[in-house]
Length: 308
Ligand code: HSE
Image 1 (tube, rainbow, N blue to C red):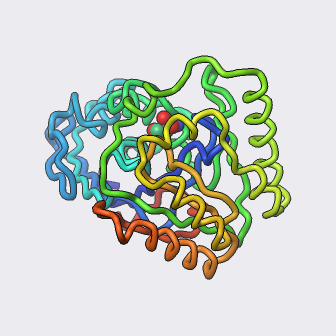
Image 2: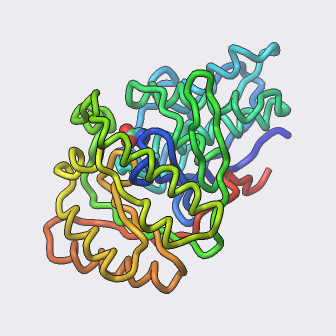
């Protein structure tokens, strides 16, 4: 294989109760990236469309991830990379993760698949570190593995792929303001009360049990976050109004997508997801903030090869 084009999905991290531990991939939102083997050794980013990002391979997560992989590969290789961003950095939809995991996946393909999924995840986490200062795994593993994932452990890294009930859809609203993940992490407390911790891990267990048993009521009851959302929601205009409107119109639950500002709602069925998207639209349409709305099935495949 000399070249390939991939789709790398947007992802929703945390999923309310699972800060840094849960995530899922979207079907209808994501970036396209093209990778070509070159006779000239080294990594080059030759085109970026859709966002103002650095072409410097030591700054752009694409370059950081690809260089790390080539350092561990026994032969000298050259790769040219084109990046087509379809959603903005700082959205809470895993923009850096789409770039980082897309690079890990595609470079692995071009090299003849020398690396495992877990190794690709670790390379992609280096991109997350370059983007926000922390090696977070929830977005990158959701993009690479597809569907819902649980980061069961960071050290050693252990990713569990979870089942996706067939009628599960997401509606997401992306207010066009930027929240840097680092800033959204800085507002968090480093200690939580035992009472809140108990509520949180019980809900993580409930959500995972609901995914395994197709129990939408249990999923709905478990989409609660008593630790992160109360602190971060103040960064997101009209968060409470959007969440209330989404649930009133039938969403199973709603919360902050990753570090925000995107707000996600999980819904049973496409018709409900469209209705919930409309309810979110109505909250934001009378504000001064531009926004984008997407309705998506959960993407169970993760990164896809478009052509090669
Ligand atoms: N789990 C991360 C956070 C996702 O909420 O900060 C952002 O990349």
